[in-house]
Length: 559
Image 1 (cartoon, helix red, strand yellow):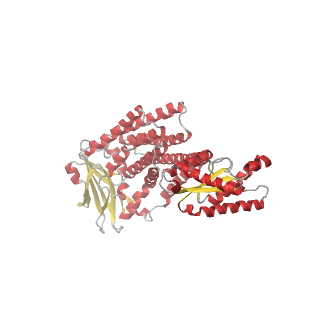
Image 2 (tube, one colour):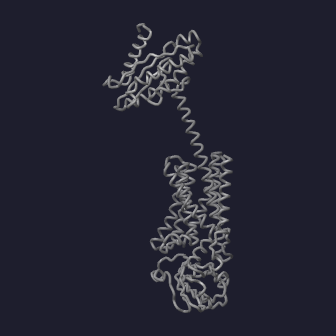
Image 3 (tube, helix red, strand yellow):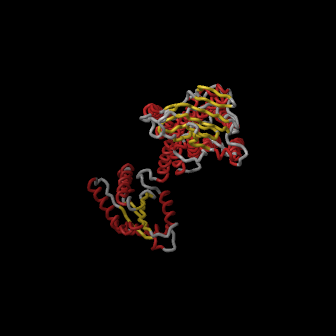
């Protein structure tokens, strides 16, 4: 197992390294042409004018997050747009309708109808094509705020060609984008694999629920960083998708934990699972019922998530671990879940630091959840790899035990138990079959005169020749000391005489090579249709009777 963990750890490190390489080397070729409009703004807010403002410092200047009904009007004078073929401005709107002007002329607006209708407005990266002109223009953005605390910080708009801005947006969030894409793709593939091997085994169910966690986290990350709308048309519902995906993580994590530790039938776990699932579903339901916006009670969901983390810590790492109930593979899975839980706590801490205006979320806090999720992915991979290896080992062990139970110890072919099981299955069908009864000649004399080792050699060699002649055509078994049986079905029944001659020829060839033993066998066979209305035992008795007649002819004696 240590080698598997090492290999997958190297794979994870390689994956992270490739993402870092992508961040630094997969820049758009005209990345440097992007103009970030952070400084030089004139801001009108609450009857106050702020001159020469850097948007990154605006929160500190106005002293508080924006409130419902506030209008923030920002003007950036003297913007040169003539150097771009398709001049486009990208700016973020957070829970607000907006109007963009170019030198006092309205160019485009967004979400005004939703604002007038009192509908929910989320967060978007907006791309607006600007009119081409040879002169510098004043760009003005009016933001009509619909949520308290909408602008805890202000992202600076960026100016460039349209496709350059798309690549710029992705590149600035390259780690998030690649992590999220990996989580979604891996989750879908792993879920499909788990669905294909669907069973009541806790390990498979845990893998499937883990896959759904990865998909939800990937979608949440794409939506949170305004990347989902670049690839999928969300029609203004990107923020709702973001919160729904996030809210589904807690109930799915309960299912992962419940499947891993087989808690799903425990009353205490069912209580926590029910509460953990009902809370996010209620929050989603209240939103779509128009009672409360989905982001208003994020703190309730965060409390729900913290309860999950504490419950997981107490039940698994304290209660079960102290009782030595956790397997080595489960410890690996738990470490992955713990990394994800720690990353969430880290992210929540810096989220509230930003909400309270102390500092903007540092990039590490934004990368914490992707790193935690990827850690859980590789923990799940290790767990799955070990599970598959152990399953294969168990299957081989079972096949080995089954072989020992149904195989003749000396010859290696099927024994009487296997024969009885096989003939029973044939009797349940209406198809015809042929039973060949075979009795070795002279085995007792070989045992008495040459010793049992020589007798064992006789049996072993005969079993091998029987396998060569009949093995590919029918079922063979040793059902007594010197008694063997062959069962032929289908087209093989028509070859019975030819196969018997082949076996006799093989024994004669052995006798020529090794004349110390005179190898021969008495043979008789019968078909099912010869004993209509009777069971398989009657067919065997008829074949056995014919075998003894053959033995009498061979020895010139009477039975």
